[in-house]
Image (tube, rainbow, N blue to C red):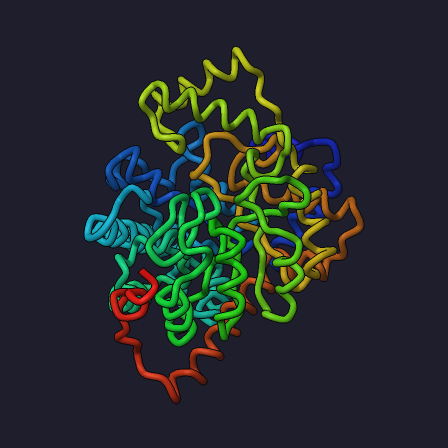
Length: 411
């Protein structure tokens, strides 16, 4: 067994705790909130799944393949159908459709391993069948081009959450990493949230400004999620969640899914990452670029400027705090694998979730609480959103409001 653990990069400091974690995950697997494999496949091989077969070991070029998902105890995954926020208008919509097509192609290619899940019951059924429940999440409201009809079309294609913004503001919502413009949600932004509630699409508040978080919590009739965000009190990065917002989750019923991204979880990494991203831009690369050429720039920068290293314990510190503020019923996991250049030591890829569960076991987390963290909270919030939607659809029809109608008076 020791050799098998080493093969998957598992920390060997507490083999007993890791084995206990594996047993727990066999009963309550991880339903992870965010994985960027579709975008990585677009960037690396232009969606040519023959050239990048995730049934084979993809170590060295991807964080994700089927064997490592199994080794990591992953029973469900929200596959991100992210597109760059520089993509605007119809280009953003088309690229999002291509991302959705990629996920459906993966599911069709690996039917013995992956199963489409559009509801909580379908996620449970996939798990019961021994397959990885595959859900879709759109990352950024630019993907709908200010069109509620496009939002509904994404829902029909299986998208079950939409992150309201990515790194840049959109006309109806402010991002955490842009300058304030709408000061939260505009009237049209509120209508987007309410239409998502009516459909049963989860409102994802990762990436949005705190003002947008608070406006969305006031507007929503259903639980929200943070698909991949950690605690701002533990690491003061704008992508993280302030304590007052975490404290509002119990009354909302939502779930905050802690991410593993070093620059969001380790205070020492915040400034280092800003400088490294500046080095990328100087060489003509986007700050989020993960191509081999961009990685070479980062490696050269890292050699000259040693990178502060996050660990499993770093992420566990966030989860400890998030549990204290929001409660164990309102936390989950959203690793952001294949969307980042660096990962914490011990959380190198999708095979690594047992390391985090072992760390939390060592900190005294109960198996019942860990079952909520890994699977039950995520499934519950999905089911609750479905219930709200079923009730709303008895009295509400699809909104045909436009941004010009709702936001024009404020312009």
